[in-house]
Image (cartoon, rainbow, N blue to C red; front, side):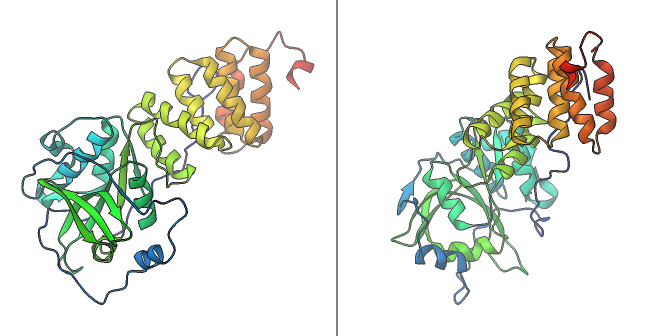
Length: 335
């Protein structure tokens, strides 16, 4: 939208990739079938060649919470939220994530519940090195496991709080239980049967160390719909770590604009146009910010660029242009 309306969003068409086959709820299981003879390609590769910079071992102290039957999801999420600076108990989360009809919690609800508490929730790449990198950085990781066979699934959420590569062990913590070591290979068996699903919960200004900017940006855009102020902090952190990523600058500009910080908004949109001169949305949004700042000639110049580039949002660019009073601007100033 042009003028003083909302700028065009940078996340159109972006969706978090859902995990296929996880439509069933995760219930708290106690049974662990130690299946031998199964391949563990991720652990084998990890032990064969340790990723650069990954310590041999690390452990995080995370409080544990008691849980009721089938409520491992709320317990795991409470642990992760506590580590992210949000003290909450599992009963406070039951209404947000627990599905009584399925006697468990669905992965999308786990992500959504964390965002509703103004935290950055990011689904990790399905790689064990990503999980361990987050733990080494001090972030506990929620993982989904199938503790039985695919045909008779027993879903369970655990929290990874440590690992020891020399001992070939991973430390998992569940509701009512302190961290227990488990063979890395056994863990991969159970985790693979849940399609390697994992997530982290972080304060909005802190980013996961293992993920690429587009994945973090996608999580930030989802957070923005719930808490724009928190998302603004995430966008700012993305621009600091990945300064050449234009989408984050547009996200920062949008949230700054929405909160009335027109100066930061204009600076962010300007940076986005420098990084991606072909982004019509960035030029349009810069025009909106400049118009709101009372700088109509610069606003009209920016929107003219958007109109020249065109694209699916052309009608919005035309509306922005119509809302800008450039009658006092010379033709030279609009070039």
